[in-house]
Image (spheres, rainbow, N blue to C red):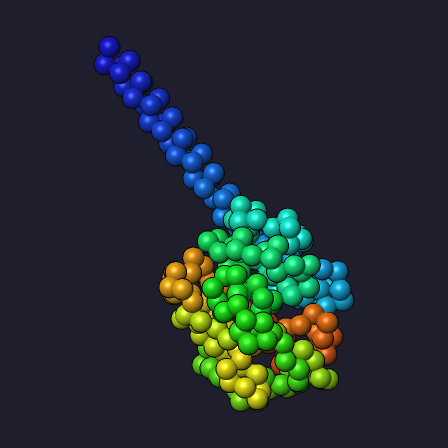
Length: 234
């Protein structure tokens, strides 16, 4: 009888270990082990160059349209990148507002849906022209050692901008207007413009796809660093 009980307890213990291992395996598959990114944009040359750059940074890139992307689809990825070449900012809207996945917005208008700026076009968000930006926070890892006025385009190009709200950290601004942020970020847990805690890192990036062919080496440095910061590599 005693031997039978010992065998029974041993079998139960083995089953518990197996169940625990199975559970651990399931949990592990829910968090991507590789660097994976959803890219939402279009098919311009600038889009292609941006996707290629993400690939060079080690990402496996999956393309989705602004209608296809959802909060649920984003959950199994390391990063979501929203470019300004999307067909409609309204198609993105607040889809990723509560997503616990880092998001980079290269569209100022989309940030207005996500309480990172106000709703006034050309005042709270918009576009300026030029070749240079002004690094405001040279100590931030996104600055990549750059400081002051930095030429990021070889020829006159477009910069998306926002006037950030809440607890945004401003890394770079327009060369001639410190109120217009060209790179601004929110760390996980800080407050957005209406006081809601940000569920994961959020970043706004100025780089305009149609002018990306003019980007200098110093122009790509903040892009690379913003991506790396967003996923916690910086």
